[in-house]
Length: 200
Image (cartoon, rainbow, N blue to C red; front, side, top):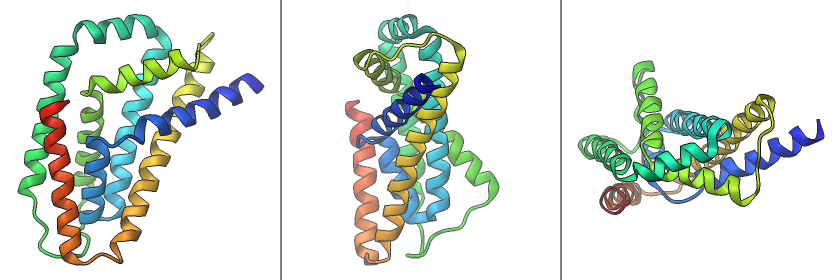
């Protein structure tokens, strides 16, 4: 029981470490939270956390073989990832909210956003390589499926926790931002997304 608890807490930290770096998901989360509020942030958090935890489960079952496959097909996966990010970027550039207030969206839009972030995270080969590197660096090993399940849950909670925190901080900070500053921040997030499409 103690081993599982330590693994669970360690994987929560790993989930936070995976979600924390400034990347396309963080930029998209900030932009959508400014436009649609905390609901959009929650959908992005769930989508990203599901992808991170799925990769955690795959890595837990076959860490070495998965890492080798990713490294061998890195170019193809990078092209796919760039295409997904480019699609998200084009969609976001076309969307221009008319007001400073959060734009409401329906259940279909919520599911679409969650799925978009899920596949965007999966399409980034850096995700699995980062996770594999962290597992190897911290000597995280799995001796049974119970440990894999605990690790998947821990990574999901850690990743979602960071995304929810970033979304909440963005929503809170928006109260004190002028409409011009919000538009500037939205433009900045789009610029970072564009840079990531070009250079990742």
